[in-house]
Length: 209
Image (cartoon, rainbow, N blue to C red; front, side, top):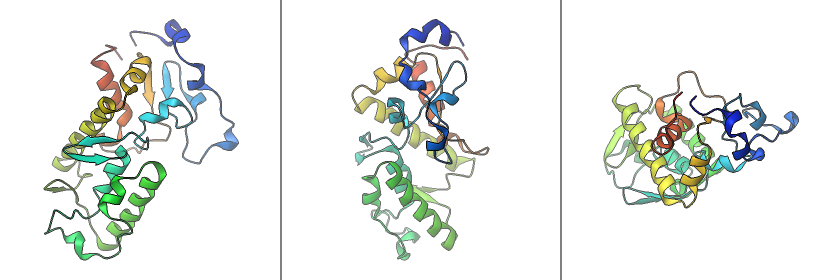
């Protein structure tokens, strides 16, 4: 890494690594103190948690408003009223409308996605939708590439439309950004928001890893 943590330690808030009692952690959680040298965890327990898809960071993408990236992500699983030929319209199990999920943040949006996932399993669905396009975002081919483009643009819109976020990202300098949960071994690229933020940061804070 071009800039070491030791060289810039005085510039980083100590709260980013403040220890959290292990007994207080959720089963999925990676705590702030678990960061290796030169790393920082994007923990929801610190200000850096705003970079999580869960963060309440409203943005407009392609003319539509979302309360969070998670809201966008999970809303794509729900039927789109503008797609009249969407086979998901025939299913009556949906607990929310697409618009309702677009307005969600955090664990509420995640729960809406989990409920949609159960419906996908029940009816053997694979495709989600964005605009006029339907696709399998886990195909590690064209669908995953399209999903990555959508999420990348959403994260960039989040940065640009929420005052102070770019400044906070730059404040991390050349620290490696890590999620506060264990990533799946076979996660598609769109899941790796922390890597995408490092790519965006590279535009303003050149680092070599």
